[in-house]
Image (cartoon, rainbow, N blue to C red):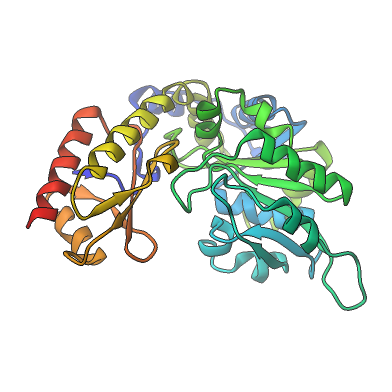
Length: 343
């Protein structure tokens, strides 16, 4: 099977498994797991923040960001199509007690800055005050789009003007850094806090890291305990995370190149449309440009041919390249999709 559903399906390479086996362990709730401590120090260093906290998932990191930055009843400025809006089961409202002010996300994965300025609320008697500005980089909604540094700087300026924090859901933050050709810390300089996933393109079996000021992380640790997210000998997770950051981040350009090859091949197939300008990292979104097949039919027939993809928004499918998908797999996938479209 050629599994292009998501980069979450990656399996750890043998060297990462060896790191897990050899991990030095302790009790993380007492702060005594040396491997967890080393991962958190590394993550803080890489992002340019004071401290970091290992969590079980990107969704947990996001919930902790809402809980720690905001009070119940606060409003968060967030983008339409952001992961926190669609894929977290209403947890920001149910658990953190926040509401959303959703803004359109433009082709640069950013907001209209004038509109952003207009929607920020103060502590009015009747209105929920704005407590946080949310960003997502890369923006997965339209295909792994990277926010330019200039746009992030503008958002940061608006936030500073209104004394508001900025958070970045950086699930694929390292992909963004590779695309921009900058260090991860150069992106993170414009946000107060950031989280990135270890389990997507970085290929660890699980985990996310939340990074920010030391006092923020101390409070986030308390909030993590409220969610039952405290862990004991978590060094087996952290060991994989350290290897992921130090080694797997170095091969992400290969995924980007495979995604570009895939997109260009699919763009040549009659009945399909691909916005090549949106293929910046490792995600390809394909639109069915004819009534020849329905979205469900295409997904089903590809599965029978050994190519796994996911239905995306109406009339579109998504394909994601990652560790374990080689150049020859891309060629086979393009051929299988071409054959299906001819049926």
